Image 1: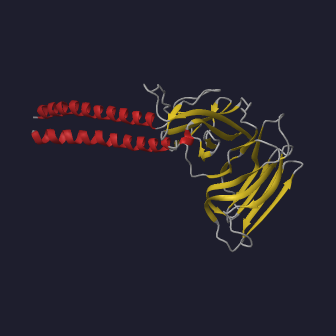
Image 2: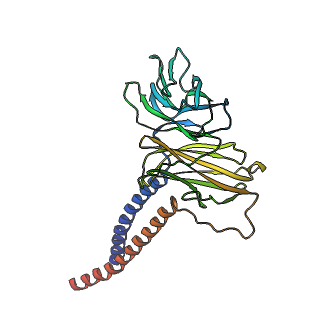
Length: 353
């Protein structure tokens, strides 16, 4: 009888554990997919820096046309737009990603009247297609005149084409940059929207992003929407400036199914970190570049008594809670099954005897 009961318990436990294992595998897969939001191995084209603030007429600044995560790239065709009323193109040169001529060709045309730059580059037939990340081209702009009537102006991709060795298109995401005159200005577009905030606040219009201490980690979260709905698989550019307007971080991330892209960085432990920091997110939605900015404060240490904050639960919190809750339910169900099954089997055995 003892052996029979043991076998019954073992078979029931095996059934329970089998079901639980399937659930665990599904949750692990879901957890991996969820935490991967904001990252992607897709090929991306992006312009750095994500923004530039001009202070006076006649100054020059450089932007780089970059590519990341590409495989089997042999040819690139790009058209970039800019506001030629306020910016002049000084120089266009090849980046380091493709080898120098004659191992590759690099051609460009600048249409100042239309504000269009066409860039065409391709590898020589004897060259192996390129993989990885790097700079495709460098463009130097000059501020031609003040822009009081146009305080902000995107520099963005109008057309992009990436071809592999067989001349087949390579799928990719892209995002441009924004030129500002004197200071950062808000994006007036309401249908297309990106809202950047930190784990300590800043959601909505003109809301502060909280207070941080030296060495503390900052999470920047951007939610991208179009007419109120989340926009998936969009490349979001982040740029972070310290109180001296020195760029500390420039990164790009793909939005997930909830329209959210997120990065994190740590405040440098130097005196230059004290003061007001600024972050911007830039994204292209429905053929138009939009952006949003946030500011947050950095002090030597957390104020006496601390401060209250609301942690934004966008990543692992919901997944882990779901994982633990489901496991608890499955294990409890398994033990209930065992508890009920053993007496039933015992009664059946007694009736058969």
